Image (tube, rainbow, N blue to C red; front, top):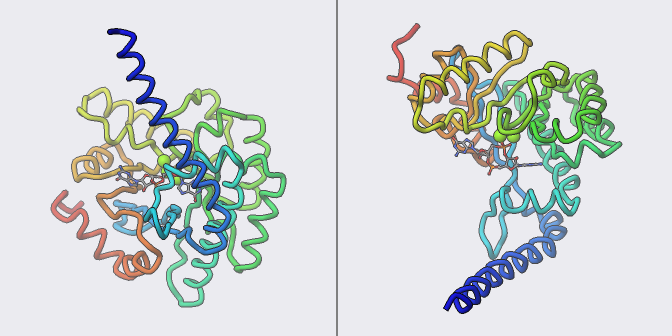
Length: 292
Ligand code: C2E
Ligand code: MG
Ligand code: MG
Ligand code: MG
């Protein structure tokens, strides 16, 4: 009967929902101790400039190494921590780890590679944000330009007035600000023009568009040209194939991040990649183009 079917349907969703809530409660119960026990680990993913065949920077992405559940993706726990406020503490932890790594690179005479950290929408409302970030630079003797801040497009549109105030101040202090997941939200071109930002990170939906149509390609070309007009740099995210790389090169987008080059790596592995960076990028796209 229909009634019986509904019953089964709701029983199923009840169960799914209950298990989801249980898991969320477990995550929330263990987040504090996870931070104290050092279970959060920084991974680094390179950004490459294909025009100069060199690594241009990296993005820091957090992982949770849980002793029972295994490694947890930020996609699982970040949205939860954004809702309960814990994200501001986790982000500060990540930023400090990243500064400590860059300071270590300085001491070892390694190249001064800038690293981007993600700044949650929740951090934007923290009145101490600028003090915390400049405090870290002072502690680890780093110039502000070494630390890039990624803020999602949706955080920009959520509260433009707050963003303009907070982010303008951060840029005046020397931080480089990148608008993350650009094109996935609802910012108008009119608004983009007025927003404090240095770099657009093209959302991977554009790059991974399947099937590729001439219209897709022209939309990307339009964004690249527009960014150029506004003196913004562009980084393409989610580049996985040589074909995608070629399409981006064709429209003049030189800066890329994605599995095609490398997945996010633990810091020690990333350092090995840094040491062989030139050969790595040359290998990565050897054969995809004849030298120009
Ligand atoms: P995001 O900042 O846009 O980071 C890019 C995501 O795309 C990362 O996922 C990265 O591993 C993934 N990715 C990179 N290249 C490719 C590719 O070629 N193909 C595909 N399919 N994916 C690729 P991840 O590490 O799972 O992080 C997910 C999101 O979680 C991030 O998106 C960011 O919004 C958030 N997040 C990660 N770490 C932090 C953090 O420390 N603080 C805050 N507030 N958010 C973070
Ligand atoms: Mg990001
Ligand atoms: Mg990103
Ligand atoms: Mg993104």
